[in-house]
Image (cartoon, rainbow, N blue to C red; front, top):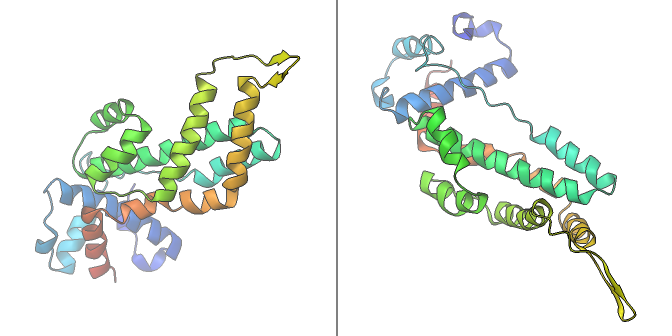
Length: 229
């Protein structure tokens, strides 16, 4: 992958922006692992030499994260429209954890951890611990709204995944609902209080907002902006 050889005048704005974001991730990792000191990149020539190294080795490789949030939220919306709020809650919980994992991976990768080490660490931590401990440790403070969506959907999701199969109890004194009906009611109520549009508003920018809190990534973008013309 070598857009670096192309004249900047020949690249459209969208492609240029995407390349800058990719380059920023690589440069941030090199800053985080002390392979680059941004204060020592003082000339455009030095910056171009740096850019021309991107993508040439594993250490300087581009790592691409594709945003699937809109697609996943559309699937959640289809479930709610079809009256299947239970499946919608499971999908939402999964999406939130995916986005949290992406943030964790971005930050730890920038700081030099291998993908294998990151995968193992993510797999051994529950979502609550990621939000309450792991994200703050790497310098990210998730919003109260994200935490609320995560923990509410997690409670309903856990009831569905660890289904106890309590039956409907019917007597002359009345009827007590079974687990299926109880979780369906909780899931439906959840989406009454948390509309799909509100959820979309919170989740679509989540990774970008978190990434903006990364000092190494801030330094990388500053370097790119200084020599972008």
